[in-house]
Structure formats: structure tokens, C-alpha cells
Length: 193
Image (cartoon, rainbow, N blue to C red; front, side, top):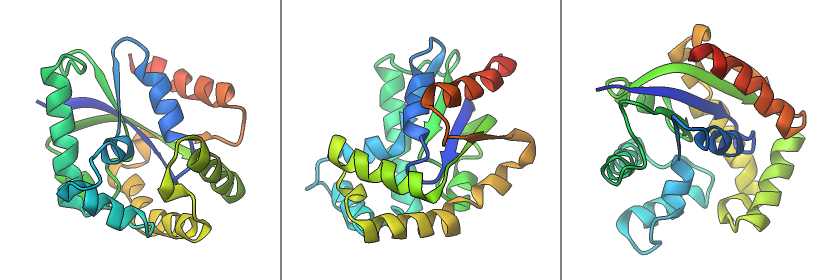
């Protein structure tokens, strides 16, 4: 079975998590933020150590463990009744983060839309620095790490847009107030129903 899926997509700090969480509270939608799943790992577990090793230098976690962890999270969310694959639209942010990950998930995801959240570089950096303090996100605290994360996004993650094709992509400006951004997203979501 393929999961009906909406991808929240964009650079770190573009608002994927914020707007993904907002969609996830609407009945019939289930939000999964891969970064939150990684950050919830025990730092002394093998996968937790892998996450810390890569995130502390602004690099992506290798594809295989990232997909493995995501599948475990989805399976457990289904078993405990949080995610209902036959009824819910899956809202993903932070995965797939590379073309190989998108290929690995092609047998699992039925992507019906990609919301490509765009923002100025200054706003991306400011948002990451704010959430480093607010959410205790150590991977967002160091300016050099932030710059590396943005470079990694441009090189490894942004090509995922072409993997899914322009027909599914809805470009959304997140430099505007969050409520206006979410309204722009909802205008497209309503058409998917």
C-alpha cells in the first residue's frame, strides 16, 4: 500500500515543521517530521550517535538509517492508532532529503503535492538561530553549521524537486506572515480533496 502524501519542502528554517504541524492537526492528516524523530533518539543509542555525528557538522544522516528510522516511526504510529494509512494523508517534512531517498521511498509514497517553501537567506538564518534557543536545537546554534546546512540543502536536497516534477510543486513564499503562508498552502490542499 502506498501512502497518500504531501511533502513540505524547503531549506532549513523555511517553515516546513511549522506548517506541517499545522496541517497535521486537521482531521485526516498525519504529520511526520523526520528531524524530530531523529532528535527524539537517545544520544547514546547507535542511531542517536549517528544523528549527532552528522547533524553537528551540518551534514545529512546517511540514506539507509534515515529511511529505516522513518519506516519504524510510521509502523509504530500505525500500530498505536495515531496514523491511519487508509484514511489519512501523510504530511512529511525532512524526508526525502535526497534523490536516493526519494527513490527508496517510491514504492511507499504516493506524492500528491509538494509545497516548496521559499524564504530569503537572512530570514532562514534568523529563524534557525531563534529555534536553536527556543527548542534547544543544538544543530541550529552555530553559524558555521547553519551555513553548511544551507550548502548541503542546495547540493543534496534541492534536486528532489526535479525528481517529483513541476506538476506537483506549489511554490509558497514564507517571508510573509505565517497565517498568510498557511492560507496559501490551504488554498492548494482544498483542491486535493
